[in-house]
Length: 312
Image: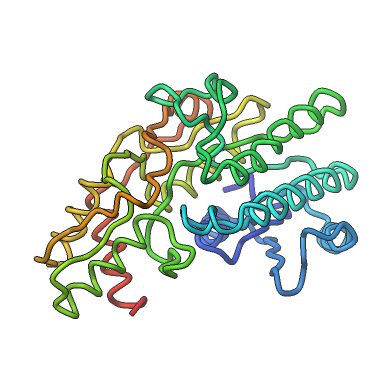
């Protein structure tokens, strides 16, 4: 609690899905000065705007969450946007934070930075052993360049920049927009709507064979805050559940939980994305004491309940 009481913390993307949990977590920890610039008021792609935000807030720490994100469809449709916006925001913000003498910079990267065919479980040492999965490579590479920048600034300037690699996050408050949502909210919406309308079938993208490491968003936020408090190394750190779930099993679980009794049709003309994902989380456990607490089934039911109560 005392760690945060006297600190001014700038949280970019603090009004978003993960950001709202980070901001709440900071307040719960006793932080009294949390600054959340809104995208409608502060375009972080513009250097003069970034300078103004930092000059006005004078933060001790920046937690950089702001990003242009989306599922496979959104990444495939807008690769240039996903690359440019995410790269320019992060590079500009980190450089200006260093210029402004910010004491610590927390970069929240992405599991999409990993090579397409990374051995299971993903270890941080494998991060550079290949090219990312093609549909989200522009996004993944843009975010991975912030690891390079942070390490370069650490070596040349002694800048305390850390880099975290969260896996697929899910939970209440996620985006259920069919144009931009990730796999869990997309499937929840499809099956809830299918159950409500009595649809005979629900179409799901791909083959169902890929796997993902799903982490409940509150656990992800806790990991990021623990790292902000306790981790000062420039080596990247995985944040995940350490378990693996296939998309086929996921779809069947969601269908069962919402009471959908129709047929699940797999559209194999649609991309699967990365074949497998599961993170090795030993470095996070040893480096700052992170341990996921929410069982997947519990988190999934909470997310479905939230969507039924709020998303419809």
